[in-house]
Figure 1: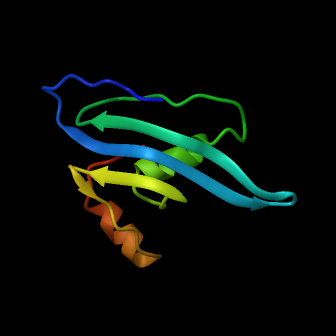
Figure 2: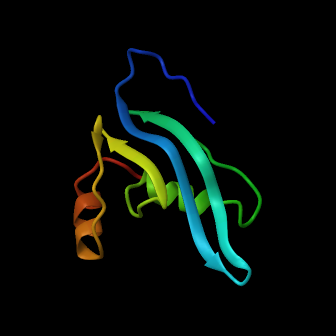
Figure 3: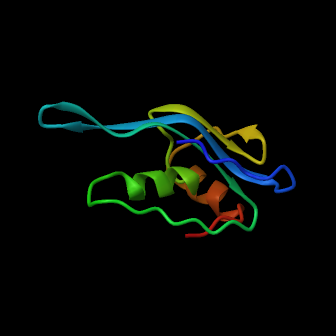
Length: 99
């Protein structure tokens, strides 16, 4: 999915071909498959879908709280380098993203 944004809007977070997989009983389960989208400063977005469709996972990636299994996440035009634990909380606390 690709969302077109007006050129005048400043892109805050951009996902490029983001996928996320989790281990399941029958092997790896892909909950996000090649998602690309941009969220501009001041945007309000709604993510809907059935239970287990990847909504929370997508929000956690957009909110810079978890890294994707593959793909690129950019924040204000720069690639995000995801850390662990306290690093993630500290990084997210300084970013104007809420959900």
